Image (cartoon, rainbow, N blue to C red):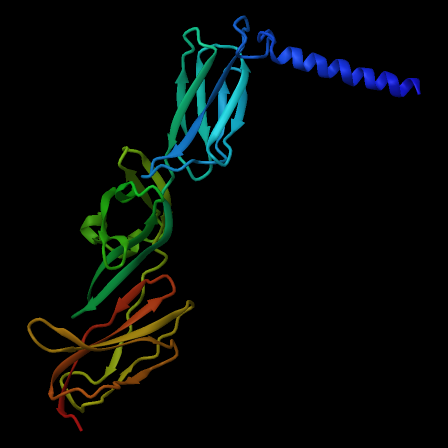
Length: 326
């Protein structure tokens, strides 16, 4: 019984103390509203740079000196309390965002409120870096490296995209292709400062994004995996006369990697025009019949070999003549 009475008295006096304290002056030394406190508080809001601005949650906000930190809540707010009012640095970090900082001067204040914008990093969604070789008469070949980068940025502030390769002394912008929605560029041998396309194999090309705030962000890299050898045609060739649905033949092509064939038929004229094409022909094939009737005319055809990394080579052209489209 005594224990219960004593417990009840404790609750009564504690409640009375709280009620009196709420109306009392702020004398708690840890209370930043106490005029005599030596401690201070920083609070603020972190938002993105996109328009309209949105709060950025889960940002780590570090205070130096002191090693104190806070993490922004779902509304982008943070608070770091009970600080000595010494001038210092707020550092803002979050994966997927560019780190940033803000210098704080107290100037005799006990509380500081800040707002900080964080810039989301651009993301490299896809990257193709591959070689293309065209085999020509008599025993010539021309080669180039093609780069295609798919990049997104939630802040929509990409200014330009560059490719760098210090070994090849290449630093060049990529052009945005509205059709493919990719940043692209084709580099010939003289652009790459090499004599042969084989000289670029294995050397990394770095993809760098410049945003409208002049930040340069490295988003990824890739290299040419291989240079494709030539596929040799067999028939028809040398203006051989065929029907409107000719069967195109080539020599068996063996390799230690995955690939498919693509065949193109062109009308033989000053500005050749593709009039028939077939992609994805299996690697063990040695012939294919044109499945669309070709009208009477002169033509030439080529066969491409394309590997799983998009590296490709084109055979020398072979001519033929359709004299009967039946």
